[in-house]
Image (cartoon, rainbow, N blue to C red; front, side):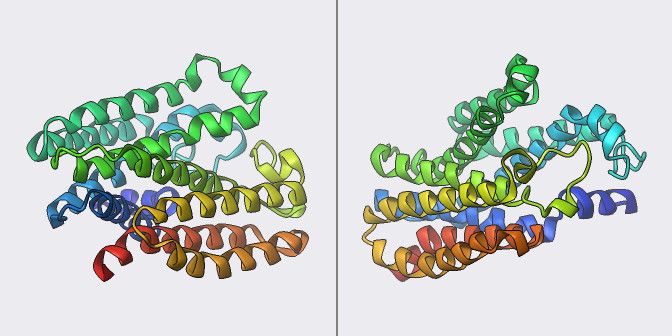
Length: 294
């Protein structure tokens, strides 16, 4: 990896931060799918899910670079693209190469997976084009948030399909709860990384604390975190693991409540870090740990 790409990933897609989370995310999806279908797990299926999901999240970052290019040039000239570290053309090439690898992996592992891959790509393309109603969406931030977060259950659906699709299973009920939990967890991460104290707000940088006020935004973040926990517990019911999920997530919910109450004295990094810890614990306790224990 050349130095400029090392710098780019460090600033915009830190692999050592995102990698473990994506591994937990994809391993949980495969293991949970195996538990609800009572089928074995192959290490290769976890590897396929992990690499494909990692590229999905990289593609989301690259899509943002294209989508926000004008705003970044005006308000965030310190970012890699506007300051000339990498170009949009180079990022486009990385996007295409990663998509090619995803396609080849799906074709090699189980060709029918390409159907879900194409659905996820199509939704990503619509997101990148702001569903062709950019100004309308920008004026409706809540709609903007949930429409963009729908990509999370689609990515998770692909990861779970790496297990249930080759096995010929269709675990609809349990899987639906799992995907809804994934959707709300995506919102937890998204809001958590965009909560800032008033003195830390930047001109031209949209944040939820600027949109709703820090206190209200923090309570919405906390509500989404609790909602994620509820659906995760419901999904865990199908694998007889609800009690364990509650025991692990409840202390984190209490910590999140304290941070929310003290939001006026809580830094952005704290919300973001707890969102990451919550995500890691959620996916480990919901899929990975019960698979190896049971």
